[in-house]
Image (cartoon, rainbow, N blue to C red; front, side, top):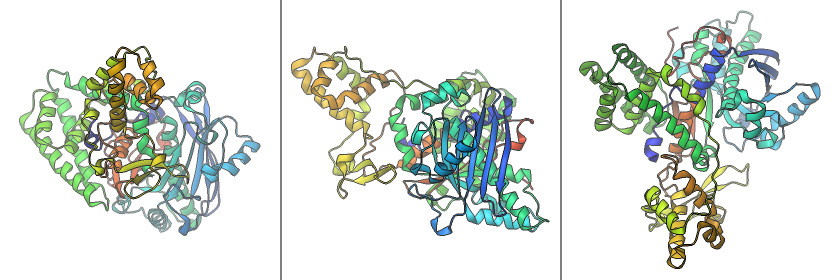
Length: 544
């Protein structure tokens, strides 16, 4: 749970995008475009019908003209190239009219509780216009140009979990069980935005010229859906420790199952080397203006090639030997890439674990626990928090708050900015230290009292005690870092969570936000029902 290691995680077969695509391709789901009412410029409405076998759902899209001066990835934007919602229930004309009035204004609107996701996206104007121009001229776009960005549209927010009138998680699980796995509804929305971006490109090109060609399927599969992610994602990892603990625990179990083998099957070694070579090529093809990320990618590429060469040359007896070699000789980035390659090698043996990614997030107070026992619990399970040094001003300079504008997380500096009294509870190590100090003082005279008595005297510590009691039963979950330090890197939190989504291509724009590409290399809607190899990890440029 070291933050630096979490900031180097790569996607793996149980990442949510991978789980969704496996279900779409193997469980008989069907997606049809029931309505595609767009003008020659691609503006209008579209409706996708999703038949999951047990129930039907709709993905409703509104495509708008957007003045280039108003196009922004920032959450404070108020207009977008397209807006959409994923919903259940019949689309009557009255309901469609309600969606027309509310979906395009996003946070300023309210949708009904049969909606599961509210989202929006902007064009990558450079890529979109380039591809359309190529198709109009009757030629396919240059894959090298596509690779520099990797998408035609990028999302700037994907809302769910009860926001703006939508179904909350409890209702989603009980009423819409097809999406009752972590972020399945959100991933479905992104998958269909990708399809819309590809289809509208063909549509606009066809209206510009009767001689226009359609995008080749190989290029369509290589094009993903972009995403711009900022601080809004970071607090999630802090506020859902049981869920995060479970995600990481399942990944560790999957890896442990592989490492249990007494020897390496030669065919599996060949597969490991093949996937590893693909990962190396994937890193080589990533394009970003961020020099630090370029350095990380290049170093991981070179070092991974060294490990692959070592494995091919020495033919290690067990996978444990390989992991030990990587841990002893290479950095965190390379270690985690090798872990993901190994998990991909055995994906068919671990996919059954995807049903265990959910967990009930309950943090009950155990009021009968003695104050002395609570102190011992913190010492044994949160010793890392007690060792954090807050004596320096710099170690306590950052505070996290929600902006009045759109209620999005922001960072402030205590030494410069006003508003620290509105701080969000993000610095768990500091909160644990404060609780421990007050418990210690209380125990001097009331050692045999219970936690129930303590929280009556110190109600501000009720939450942290509930959290400590619950999380002490898990091996992971708490991120062992000082998130209040002036040099904190929120982008490490973002990369950790995005890796579980399935995002592996990062383009950091600062330490606070990142652009990335989702579903690159994945099958298309038109591929559903056909053969499926589940081998679209580490996407590389197609040979066309």
